[in-house]
Image (cartoon, rainbow, N blue to C red; front, side, top):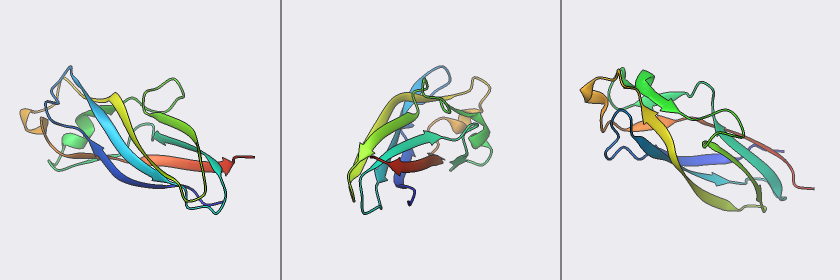
Length: 117
């Protein structure tokens, strides 16, 4: 079984300031010829890249457990693609430099697929 394809991962940074949250957006596609149960989550700790050098260490992603906001567990039909917006899943630390506000961030999403049975 093939893992799921994750594309268009982005963080809504408009107005992202310390003590405020932003949305995590991504698209998942089932590349398998059969239906699967797909799980997707941000790594713990999150693997982040930033358009401003050094800012990736200041982004905080609610990730890693089923109780977290940055977690998806859904059924995907063969070839099906779905868009996800996980609201308020990302914040920026209070210690971040001003240059990190409004930077573009990308968060690595880890996926797995099992038989939908």
